[in-house]
Image (cartoon, rainbow, N blue to C red; front, side):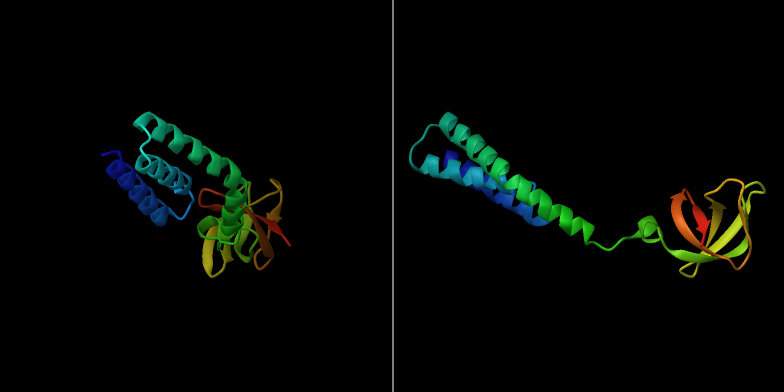
Length: 145
């Protein structure tokens, strides 16, 4: 019976890993394979579980630094989306940016955004070029170039 349980655990963990692409369960699948081998060799269930935990922890400890670097570089190379995609872009002031009024409209990448200047007392006149410094809600915080 433990052999069937370990087969189910291994298959479930491999399916989970295949659906996440985030290296969340591969170490436990390897531990499950080691426990399955122990079950086939006649080890009692408590020893199988100890082997499962030990092998899983070993592979996790040995491979996690490498896996973390791989995942980190994959995320850094991913295209920016939504708000992140607009940070650092340049735009043109359509309506004077004045924090005291408050008013300001900027066109960035063909879209019009409400805008405020990063410098509180600074106004930026129409047709000036600005850079998006940050986004607060639906407002762009810009600086004049």
